[in-house]
Length: 207
Image (cartoon, rainbow, N blue to C red; front, side, top):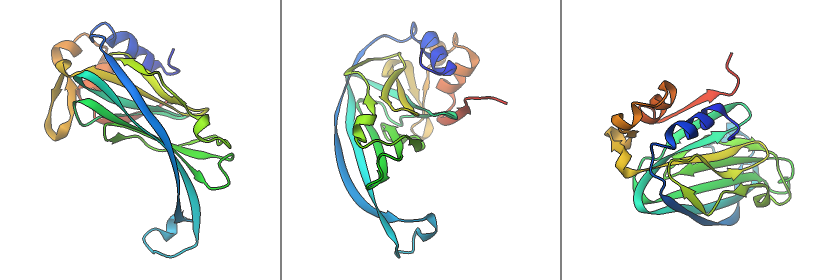
């Protein structure tokens, strides 16, 4: 179970249609600090007051012997967001970041994540004195056609679904879609996601 019905349905409906190719996942954490405006009203002014922000970034890549692309998901308490990577390649960069005010990392942070240049909205997560340690990273080997969690925190999770190049068609503005003959047997909601949409979200609790 992937903690969301759309992800579970996606996994069960596409798994038998996609050849299972191995994809390596590797990278490392770095950390830095920077000055930021104290409030949004200051943006563009160049004037203080400023606060110090710490950034913990995991920079890495997914690498395969055959070209592939993918779709990234961010599951929060309220919504499931998604965004398609705008490229097909042997390697797709992966970014996972945690940002917090210096000295207050135990009180809360913001998680951001991206795949191949496609980024998802930032999500508030519980803080920790060991901020990087509060984010559990996924397996070293992924399989195409399977939804896999790449980063898990106490309140937001980052998933990816990787698809081999042979099942995709690239359209205008670097938007890929699943081939129609492959998508024909999929449930309507899954087919729309993989054929027509670039980004989107659905509420976890529909009215």
